[in-house]
Image (cartoon, rainbow, N blue to C red):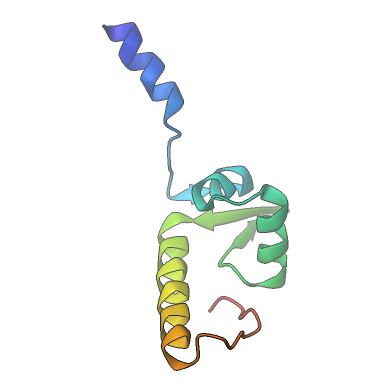
Length: 89
């Protein structure tokens, strides 16, 4: 029984508050290359620790909420109109 529980934990990735680019890309469901590009462009909230990008889960959650609110509001205004990508706040 104990081994089954240990094995099941291996299948569920641990989500930490501060994540590296691989963990954050898994969390967001995008490739690490895409996330690196978004972080470099300031589109997604991130910070550098040394020369490595880091991502706070709570900031990503807030950012996703804002993005979904923005897109919902835009869809109500003009569903056919596309807007350029906005940088993270």
